[in-house]
Length: 411
Image (tube, rainbow, N blue to C red; front, side, top):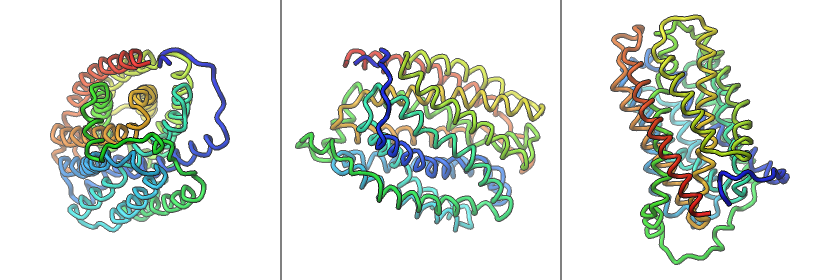
């Protein structure tokens, strides 16, 4: 079926709804663990005496280790029950997050982020493979939109609560909260999710290494990998410095930060299901292109801001978040149409790995571009990041059209 042709909407079954909820809540904890580093950034830089490059490496350490873990496990991703894989990596993620809470030096924090990334970075790809197995393409946009609500919820609920308790009990407390929530979700997933083994009935004589190589050498798959990597580059390059830029350049107070992230998160929660539903009914590529153009305009404006009213800062963040979600949902729904079912786990693992590695490179490069002369001085060269991201988004639009063309040919 052509990815661009609308299909009559079909309601989810009760079990499909349950799976979406479980995956969305799992994503909530994993995304919050990663996303909370940005709003805690200014606090961490000041409390640990970090430089911008050190903080950039703390963020990218998670991304690099997640990417490496995904590549190492990609060959095995289609050899096991996907539910068991999810539970295994989720418990490792919980342990890594606990180590983050116990870290009291920069090097211990760096080590803890690496451990968390080794496990947490694989969870997203396993979740995507589960979703792709259980939902046909004409339902996948809506399912993706709802599952990605974990991203918005992490900002609406997780980040404001995390910032509040961090102000009360220190920056480590949000990680302790995540450990508690994730432990509950692990148990619920163990008890409620059915085994996901349909892919195991598609017999293959490939070993794990050969399976990995087969997936990597497939030309159409590599086109999808590049699309996802470009999608990741722009966001990771700008995101780690969000709170530091807001506090030091736009004069946003620590008390206003939770409101800022909450407003952006609410926008994400509202826009994601709408974009997902729209992408199932119309052309995913057109939706992506419109959102990408809007994002380029907003980023150039935002990265060149000087101190302005808090209402304007909130408004621009809401518009930027809406544009980001308008890209992510249709793009990720589109890329899931590339792999065959027996390759899906490996494809999603590699795809997630390259996404994480690209993000790690972006965060590291961003840390080298952005300069802060003292702990309280404004960030410099943040506008340069904006112009670099614009170039990346243009390349991303071209790559999305290439992926769509491959899917049309395939179907």
